[in-house]
Length: 406
Image (tube, rainbow, N blue to C red; front, side, top):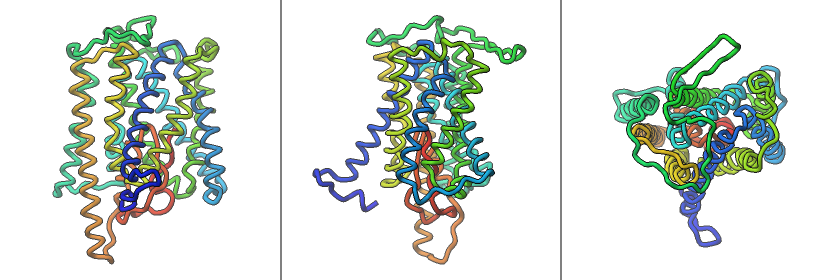
């Protein structure tokens, strides 16, 4: 971290540049939340929106992969190709489609607060897969357990309790009117294949979709490590995952969104929302967060995650005329507190492990690879590249921090 103390040519310290860049990335992703909700509420299909976004992301990441990973790319084997195709289905297709569906049935504020659960789910799945161990006798192990408990409790509270209205926006700078009231306890009925029927309050259904989205992304983050060990080109991996998703979304769109109105013609705002999602969310934000992990570590990147929730709440209040409920505030605070407690436990564990390695060079320390994986989850939606190797890691090489996630 000593490099952060250097002063750039313009007179700013690298630490100042780092924090400014990470804050800008979170504000940029908050803009993605708002524009995505506008596009969905104006009628564009969720599958169509994801299809267009991933087309842009495939081209962008493909070009970057060709330029930056000439020496890292290897010949794709059939096994690796199938694994990447499945990763694209879980981490891109299911993640994005469920997220947009949840965003439609809830609100940008609600969806942003729920997204803070992604690193917690990542940690839990890593424990179940034995990628991460919990030393319950140690204070940092207890902090991780309590952090997960608080975050899960907050997500449950978000899902089942709304409470009274705390803030009701009276602004109308960019208010989008919907064909039916999504947030006024309306009942939503979904039908699949003609015989599967689900009917419940729209915001509860949206919460379920958001939980599925976070879980899918968490599974994807844990799947990256073994894949990138065989194919150590994270940007190219992300490009192939997006390409796989494009093919999958085309099939899903033909089945679930066959209406032409869901795909074209797109309005000007929908076109700009799609371009913003592909370039900014999948390109700029991913690059900044990858650079942040490389320069300052995943903890610094993770610490800025709640800023996006605050920015989304403000933008939603101003542009979308959204209402803020007591349940969203309390549940969001529980999730954020649990998130920071988990981050603190991970950081304390890293310090203890690093100290042991420094004092006993011959000691072989067990893997703490999920610390970096959780850091990748906290990088939104979305993204990290290989970073400097931590002394406590068992997995080495270019798979250290996972692939950029569109």
